[in-house]
Amino acid sequence: MVSFLLYIGFICYCYILYSESLEKYYIGHSCDDLQERLRKHLSNHKGFTSKAKD
Image (spheres, rainbow, N blue to C red):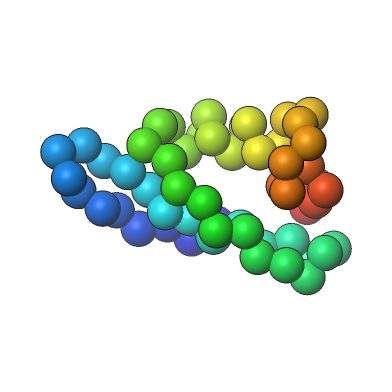
């Protein structure tokens, strides 16, 4: 996972996830804890990242 910081009064992250199995990138952002956001990406949901578990 790649991230950088954008400071505007609080810390937010922009990140890029890459799935080797799908050969696709996902670009996301969050102002929450990155570990919690990654857990949500890996959880059982119907979004784009639910298709890739790698």
